[in-house]
Amino acid sequence: MRLYLIGMPGAGKTTLGRGLATAYQLPFLDLDEEIVRREQRSVSEIFAQDGEEYFRQREADVLREVVAAYPSLVLATGGGTPCFHHNLEVLLETGLTLYLAVPVPELVRRLQAVAASRPLLAAHQSAHALETRLRETLAARQRFYERAPLCCTAPTCSLETVQQLIARYNALA
Image (cartoon, rainbow, N blue to C red; front, side, top):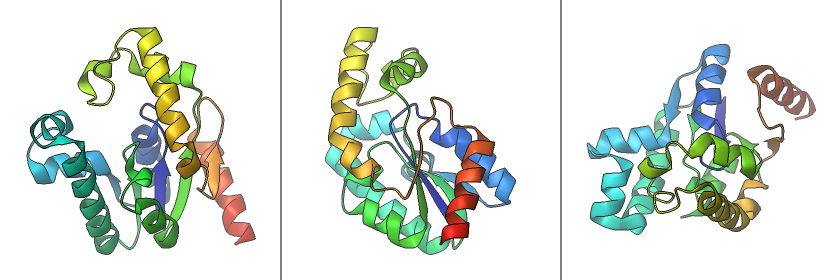
């Protein structure tokens, strides 16, 4: 099984992904962490030195390499991953995709302390500016996220909730 987690920054993709990987005894990868490992520099450095376009192409390349290398895994994608270079099609065609739909006020609460370290949020550190940026970003990405066959809409998607969603989905498939 390949399970892909998509959603906004701060949705909990990495935290939940690690728990799901343990529960299903699968390898876990965070796509941003994998890009950092391969590039030997942080996402912020990649953005600053080469720009978002370079990062998005690298993200698409690494996604395809990871999918080819892992017949089973849990993958936490970057927030923008599904929105560029036909990455969503790769996710939908090669595994089960879960959208973690977290309300914007909760995202603001989770991200305010770390916004400065995130390239697309660094300029929006006040709660109001961060909320505005997140709402704009979500509006642009929603149509991609909503194509995922599974969606966890609770403010906090627990491991148990997601396992129940996956079990119900697999029983119907």
